[in-house]
Image 1 (tube, rainbow, N blue to C red):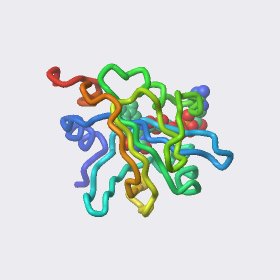
Image 2 (image 1 turned 135 degrees about the vertical axis):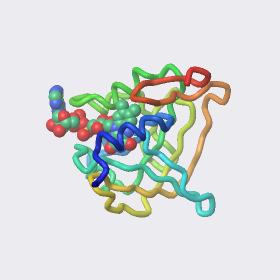
Image 3 (image 1 turned 90 degrees about the horizontal axis):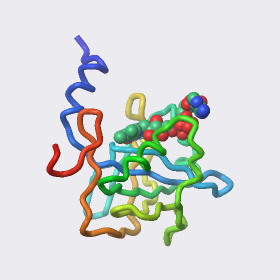
Image 4 (image 1 turned 180 degrees about the vertical axis):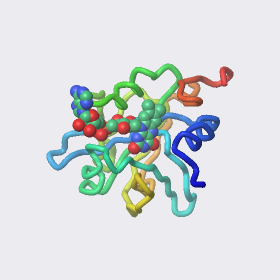
Length: 160
Ligand SMILES: Cc1cc2nc3c(=O)[nH]c(=O)nc-3n(C[C@H](O)[C@H](O)[C@H](O)COP(=O)(O)OP(=O)(O)OC[C@H]3O[C@@H](n4cnc5c(N)ncnc54)[C@H](O)[C@@H]3O)c2cc1C
C-alpha cells in the first residue's frame, strides 16, 4: 500500500526545521518571496543548497527566469514574517527588501541570508527541486536563536 499524504505529514511533523523566506524577482525586477522549510545544505565544495518548491506556486516561473534566489533564515519571534510570506494573496513585493551583491532581492532584519545562482531545476513529484550554488553569505544576528517549525507549529529553541 502506498504511504498516504496524511501518513507522510504525520511523520514529517516530528522532524524539526528552521524557517526561511526564499526570494527572487519577476521579469520587471519586482521582488517575490515565499516561506520555505524544505531548505537543505547539499555540498560544501562546491557550496550547494536546495529548496523544494510546489509546482502550483504562482511565482515558480520567476525562479526559472531570473536564474537566482536568496535564502533568508528567520530568527525566533519572526512568525509574522513567516505567516505574511505563506498567505495566499499576499502582495509579496511589500517586504523590507534590499538588493544583494549579485542583484537578488534579500530581506532586512533576518538571522542570516545567502545569495544563490540556480544550477538545476529537477522534477520532484508535485514539487520542483531547485539546486543553487551559494555566491554570498551573511550572518546578521549572530546572538539570536532561529525560528523553528515542528508539528505544524512555530517554536523556539528550548521549547521543542
Ligand atoms: C512553515 C512553512 C513552510 C513552508 N515550506 C514550503 C516549502 O518548502 N516549499 C513550498 O513550495 N511551499 C512551502 N510553504 C508554503 C508556501 O509558503 C506557500 O504555498 C506560498 O507562499 C504560496 O505562494 P503563491 O505565490 O503561490 O501564493 P499566492 O499566489 O499568493 O496564492 C496561492 C493561491 O491562492 C490563490 N489566491 C490568490 N489571492 C487570493 C486571495 N486573496 N484569497 C484567496 N486565494 C487567493 C491564488 O490563485 C493561488 O492559487 C510553507 C509554508 C509554511 C507556513
